Image (cartoon, rainbow, N blue to C red; front, side, top):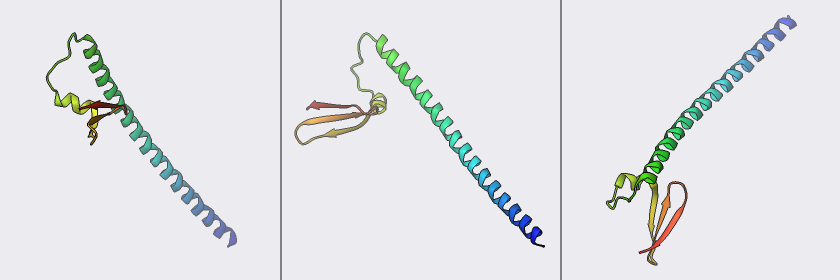
Length: 100
C-alpha cells in the first residue's frame, strides 16, 4: 500500500515538473518569436534609413521646402526654451540646440 502511495506522489511530481517545463518552453518560444519580429522590424528600419542616407548623399542640393513626413521621421521632440533657444531631440538620441 505504501508503494502505491509513493508511485502516485512521484507521478504527480513528474506531471508537475512536466507542466513546469512545458510552460518554460512556451514562454521561451514566445520570447524568441517576439525577438525575431523585433529583429525584422529593425532590419526594415535600417534599410529605410540607409536608403534615405544614400539618397541624400546623391543629392546635389537639399530641397528648400518643408517635408513633414521627413521631419517626423527624424525629430523625436522639439523643445522651445524661455531663453530663446530651440532644442531638437533626434530619434537617435542626439540633441541640437539652436538660437531662435
